[in-house]
Image (cartoon, rainbow, N blue to C red; front, top):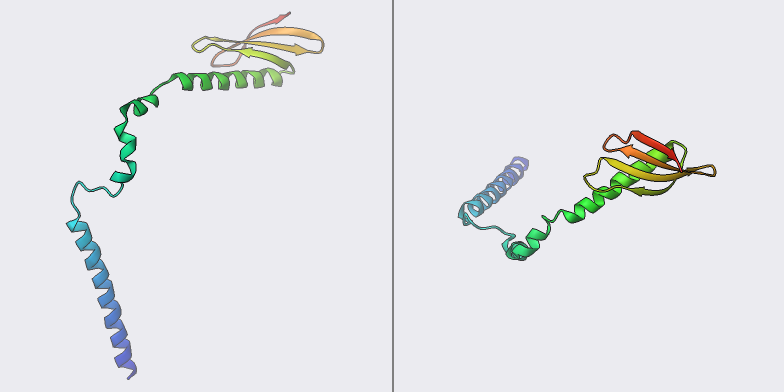
Length: 124
């Protein structure tokens, strides 16, 4: 009796696995070749070509990159022992201009870009 129930259980399990694999295989074969389950979901993204071109606009990226350069320059000057008042950098320029103070004296410091090395240090 024990062998009968084990063999029955084995047959049912094997049959279930085969049926599941057959269903998956049939579904993959009968699906149209151009069908994408996400077509309706993302259709609005690709319709608006003007919206797509907005991402190619580099002006916003340049502004954020300038702020990164200015923060790194301020960090460099702070590590030299100065208190930073103002940092100016124009995109494409090879110099970063920093106004800083140490003690009671004001300084104008020019750093080279991209190395952030001190080019000029002038007491103001």
